[in-house]
Image (cartoon, rainbow, N blue to C red; front, side, top):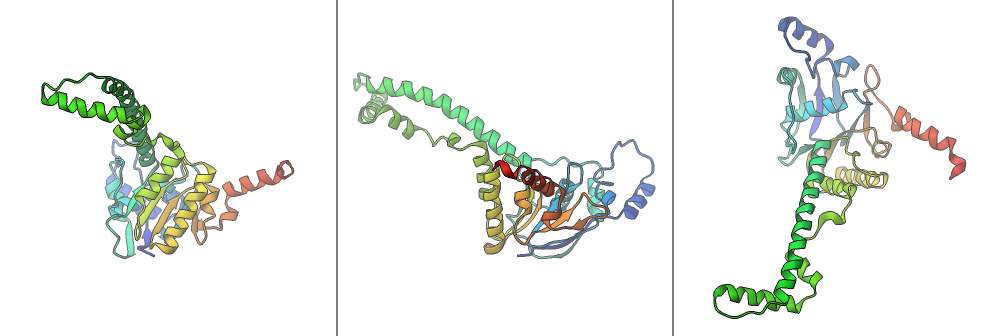
Length: 284
């Protein structure tokens, strides 16, 4: 499904004219000006899966955030805009935009990190509560109850319950399931599968962060299936060779000037992996 067909960024000439009109200012940075124009990156034509590839500082995350803000997509983490961000957005254009479902969103590394941090804090609270329930179990099981008030009746019910159960079963019934069963990588993967619904536009900023190679392969398959069978469109910034290998993905190489589309097998990061493993082929 194609919800977003084409997006254009201001050219270096348009940015230059803006600087002339703006005149001298006290600002140290005109971000996001001079980031994408530095690579003559002026237009993206989208496919069901479109990838922005490049090294650190290439502008792939900048492009993704500009598109998200221009479209007004949902995001979980706060995005800090620069003083000139709105000026820049005004110079960007959306072409042939179809109705974008309301649940469409951008997912950043900060979103995933905050999610894992919240789970960690929840786990700590669960662990503290577990110790308290251990003591409550022992107190209830061996309590001598005399029916003198309604509070005694509540204690009696708790005592009967404790005497019918083992300590572990009593605790499990008092607590929610402990999410520490999952590793950070598993929780990160779950975040994507929970946030990505059918029929939506999703912008993913370096989703490979916090994911093992195995989980990256699982995410690759999940994205491919979501685009092929469930009406989703993806725009992804990444340098993961696993995600770059997705079937039918259109890849923009932001390490080149001007930016061009390339097969994943021609990208420097992928070639580096290939040459390394080829050199050590005899060790496998």
